[in-house]
Amino acid sequence: MKRGDSQPTPRHYINGRWVSGSTTGTSINPSDTREVVAEYARADRNQAEEAIRAAADALPSWSLSTPQRRADALDQIGSEILARKDELGTLLAREEGKTLPEAVGEVARAGQIFKFFAGEALRVPGDTIASVRPGVQVDVTREPVGVVGLITPWNFPFAIPAWKIAPALAYGNTVVFKPAELVPACGWALTDIVSRCGLPAGVFNLVMGSGREVGQTLVDHPLVNALSFTGSVPTGERILQAASARRAKAQLEMGGKNPLVVLADADLEQAVDCALQGAYFSTGQRCTASSRLIVEAKVHDAFVARLRQRLVDLKVGHALERGIEMGPVVDKNQLDQDLAYIEIARNEGAEHVWGGERLQRATPGHYMSPALFLARPEHRIAREEVFGPVACVLRADDYDHALALANDTPFGLCAGLCTTSLKHAMHFKRHADVGMTMVNLPTAGVDFHVPFGGRKASSHGAREQGRYAVEFFTTVKTGYMLA
Ligand code: TXE
Image (tube, rainbow, N blue to C red):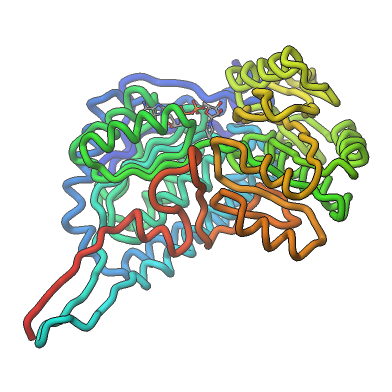
């Protein structure tokens, strides 16, 4: 296997030092599987425990650090990420396979998140409230929740770690960060930047390796006070059970089967654009992807014809190639999963419109064409998260039927609506059973300074991002004093 041009050799970062792993692993470029992106250290249980103890030892002092110190550190991290966004974006595109513009955009967002939480570190909220008893003063203050374990997926290897690490540090917690195994170089590059912002040893630790060994050690360890996880539903459920059993705080962001409703009065070009971006960009590997396109009967055929044409024209290829609109699938396992769902859809009688085939390109990679089916609500392709460039269209009789279909899912992350009707837009915003709604916008692509999260099987615990992140990363104390 050939090596990448500037191949990093990621090591763990434990107690302020870079350390080798008990074993090593490789991450591979999904656009060109001959290319090793990184040979990285893999931790065992002992190293994970070492990182947890370092974070626990650093907690008493860091939890009392001044907001100014935390703000300065986060601001410095954000500045460096933003200054290096093209270089880091290239690394991300090589390791995860999203297109270069998507990758640079994600890195920039990570930088903005650190800048945002630099500000929030200076605005830790609290209350003073009049007591019901004479002469008594009451205040409500927030303290760090403690040692936090951050377990992240491969699909946003800069942005998701950023939106967990930044608030964790802003509110005075210490961190053990475990990135997904497919993207160690991105986790390491972020840690490299964090390691140079003046944090005391042990405040921030990186351990790479398997979910089963390293991740599970974080989940089970009594010194880890809180766990913030993004990933699949089965793993999230296991983490929740284990965390609840030992009363650790848990925040979970998991899957989605997000609807985009297109009403007959919508601007059709805009609706097709929303569907294309929401369902297929980032190769459909987003928890906010619109994988169910619910279209009112009157415009159903016209919508399908236009979307099909856009899919025929969509340029799929090497993530670093100029003009490419959709990169490869992240790895062979995910590609197999995507192709298996194409088979399931065909076998269950969904009508194939376009795509869903393996593609050959100049470099050997995990390429597939974007897939579109016409489905019925009971089809698995309309109910289960595929996590690839695969979407289905469901026909709706009218708005009420479309809303019912939109809510007919175990998930509840986000929901989109394309319409020119203010009445329907307002109704949908209120009645879609999700954490985020988008009107005349793609379901994927959200702001960095407002809450992110869902309902039902999609999420558990306090919201991430924006001012609401304070809920998870702090714990409240009520103080009474006789004046
Ligand atoms: O997810 P996992 P994977 C879906 C998507 C994908 C599938 C599997 O369908 O095909 O999940 O992806 C860590 N204790 N999504 O395997 O297993 C793991 O190492 C503690 C959708 O990547 O959930 C990684 O760091 N940690 C989703 C993280 O959990 C454990 C995004 C996520 O891995 C662990 C990602 C354990 N026992 C995948 N087991 C979305 N909707 O955003 C694993 N991990």
